Image 1 (cartoon, helix red, strand yellow):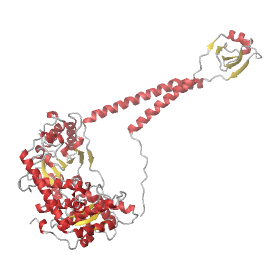
Image 2 (cartoon, one colour):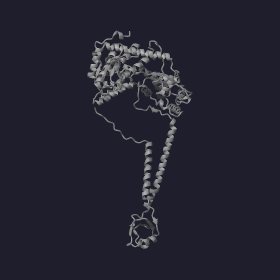
Image 3 (cartoon, one colour):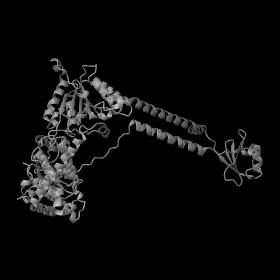
Image 4 (cartoon, one colour):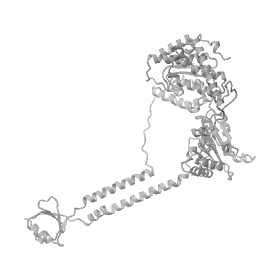
Length: 622
């Protein structure tokens, strides 16, 4: 495959950079002229009358007399440089004055012309003055530029789009059918406002795009502007807020003023929760800069001024922290939920990202879509890009199935760290640990399917047992969560069964942390505890100061019950994992041996090794 490299072309300096260079050059030139002038300046010579020069020259006290016109420069005997100067009468010569040539050496030099004198005078006086003037002008312009920058401090920093040749449209965005349908109505509002005004419909002021990171909220906003063919002002919520109070509100006013001049148009505010958080939290008081910025947004969106054909699109993944005044009718009238793509949408997204990449015939995009449940559009784009990078690294002309699989695993569970060397004892322990995860997850009925088991370190782990659900799920039952808990503890229990309870290692630290988090979530957020069934206990997840200031919504006695519930879930999961592993030790040993031999075992081979495995009655929950 031809490898094309992009050469970096030299860029023309900006106006500010050019001004700085001119000023720097002027300073250097001025210093050089001052130095040259100082070097060319004759040293201070003692001036004596011509009569004294004649007397001392004839007495043999001088070694040389330099004659330049009517001016004499005299060097005494024993000296290397002249130290005396004198002037003859107009038209006279040294012979006329009476200086004898046999007593002193006389050297005649041509007299300096008027032109040379003028040039010398100009170089020594006028040019430095001009350079100093140019330097002063440059300094004044620089100061003026800084003043203009200070005056523009309160101006909006929104970037304007809308004149690009390659506009994004809904056809270029795969999936998100319901979201696109909602946004298509916004396009109609912008294209045909009179159609809705004729039946008394009011154009919505704002549309809030809510969804997890990487689901395409910004791209959908760009597509709305591309479809409607209107200007698109884009800005991040954090760009409003500065350390000086009032700057954010000034930028909001300037942004909406620009938008009204370009109406109909779209204002897109990304990560609006940076300025739109709930007010009245007690942080910063009434003069909090963020609150003043939010107040100005509220006024601009639904104040006294009406009838402006400007629609505000905003994106966030934390709609729960937004101020209620933002979400009321008249401001953000519509809320478009953008969720993670399902399997058909993932398939369509992958095809778009692989469209301009050379794919081999053995690449199964549909199978990849099935394995990437829970991935966002950004994750899928990353998998496609990593596939191309790996293919190029392996000098492939096309992206092969092996390249795609490696890219998927790299994005999902991290890159392989083959450079990390483990001794034989650590390899065996890791093999037992991963085999414990695998056998428990395989045997328990509500666990996911084993996809791959490896003892090659990946990311921050010593090994990986990878489970993939057979289909997309929107809901999870208590039985599923309990099987997942037992599966998480399978590695630690396998170490305990093979080496004893006092020989367990730190390799299960991450598993134990995730198990504790899942158990607590079951009790506090999902109402899945025994004593606290169907009760949910809100936990503040904001910044540290907010968590400190908010009181807990339940008593210390309830907190003790929650802790007991979590402990009971973990204890039950460990007991079930222990029962499964002890009942299937033969299969555990088979997988351990295969891992020590091959280091990585795929799903098909795992199924063969686990033939004959069974679920003991003591481990069932029915």
